View 1 (spheres, rainbow, N blue to C red):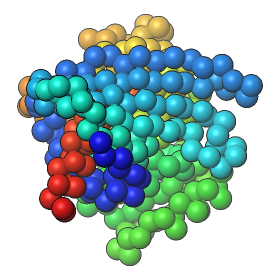
View 2 (cartoon, helix red, strand yellow):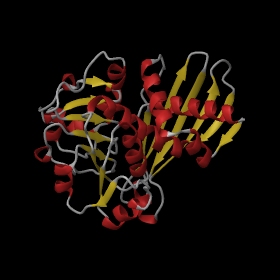
View 3 (tube, rainbow, N blue to C red):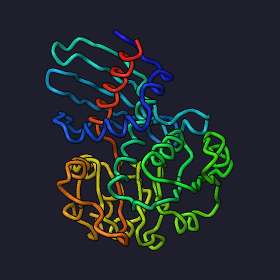
View 4 (cartoon, helix red, strand yellow):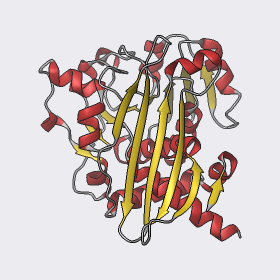
Length: 315
């Protein structure tokens, strides 16, 4: 059995290849039951979360990801999200590899957002606002730049110093990258807004949004978390990674439904319907689109398979 570390996972998952692997995965027959989520009590202010995410392709591979989310870790300069991925042979159940699931998760999450934006963001989108400065932020920026000609990147975080530090992780001489203090102004200037925070209160208001904008919501994955308010949800064409996941875990959608301003039938499509061209997320330049991601296990399996494929080609 192989043990594949962080650096190798990163090297074997270039953003452009992973985006296309995810596009193919959403078209294919991959069994991906709803993930199991447990709340773990801690001595800190915020409880932790344990996630178990299985997926399999008949007679090919079985994969399961174990994820822990400890929001208080950031106060000690530790990653809030950690994960491991176990890949089994689908013919006999024998373990084939254990991969660093944290790097795999960061990259597949970012690439899923970029894939959604490929169908939802305007073709001429050239400015990106990154809301959040955690480990996922640089991956989201890099992934979105694979499919849109981004010329300006703005970064906002509660801690402005962290936003400034994130700039140093990006190396694009042809792109203007700035850290901003005023979130409202950033939203007003951005064609594409990507959010990756663990916020329990909405950061972005619907009244701030402008025509033609695309909103990418990645951070909130429990009913208690919100990155935008209910007005933002009602103003946009909402697309989700999966119906089941979004309706059980997205605080933004659940809250809007509870308030009676949104119903599940208002969701325009899930990702598989977009890539199969069964539904359309954007009909014109002026529509506001919103992609809500809570994570899908089929994305992990696709990423793990790509790692092994690329590794085999380097031997």
